[in-house]
Length: 250
Image: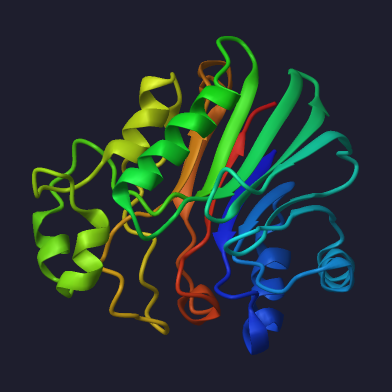
């Protein structure tokens, strides 16, 4: 089973055909998507028809919607949404697998405040932490990974964007990702390299860092392998984030 996550930048716009082509090529069984700006039922229907997948969209009160798409024969047996506890949103689906129910959460944490981002992560991690269940949290966490030297990356950012990633002590703020790790989740992409910016859409808010994650519960970690950041000519220009995929032996 292939799980993929992708922030497609403001709903895709005129890049949507390229985004759909990447999804068709990658053929994920489950796709977590972020930044589905202005998406409603009609836009979701277009996405479903183009990808052959079934979508669960979670709208946002303050930011942009997120979604989880599921490819048949997988079916969504349960779904839920979080709108008001996060700057953006979280969408959760449960699908049946031979190894048991799998919960997949697509989320997008706040880009602006390190403290609020940490609070979002603590709450979301507590909500989905499971000692023996199969759980994946996937998305744009807008946070830096612990145990990595971020000095050079942060120094390359303008001060107004650098502040988004600074801890109270002035160092790299890694509290959001650390909150998930403290709750028992495993960062499956520790060695995968940066997910932003892409070659074609380089904004000044990004240094070469990893902001997009797949986090697995202990039970799911045993089934996960081969996480990759998808870097191709198509993904170089389809969004400002690269998609991330991982294989799950379920």
